[in-house]
Length: 156
Image (cartoon, rainbow, N blue to C red; front, side, top):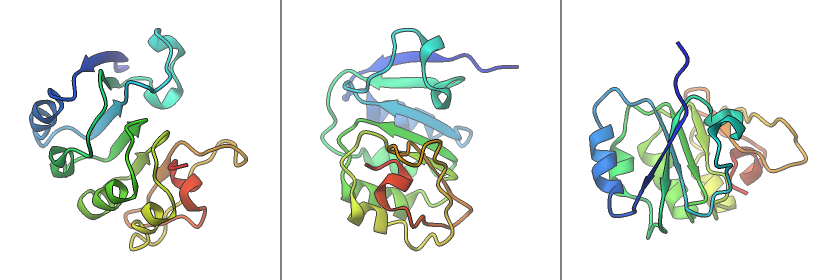
């Protein structure tokens, strides 16, 4: 059975409650995009990595990485697009969500320092469909890091 792709718009004020509800021990994937993320109005035209997911789109800007997100210790795949995240946010994700097997931070402000936060996770492989373009995701083998720098993790 194919999962339905849907878009749910939420305000930044509603996000902590949503994340608390998702901390049910069963949520393994989360897609959260900022108000400036460029996606089509039709889910049929969305990139493949969004297909089959409930996509939560913020209606306003975040003032930082919500601490409730760092409690989602069952997550395997996390997509956070265009949320204004920075190096410290990437470091918090690396510290608290080490169980992730897929991380997509496209459109954020994470650079070399944020990438270094994943260094303790020694053998990551980054999935790049087009090495000359900015990568959109990173895949980790339990513990890993890419030598590709920020682009290898979709931070650039």
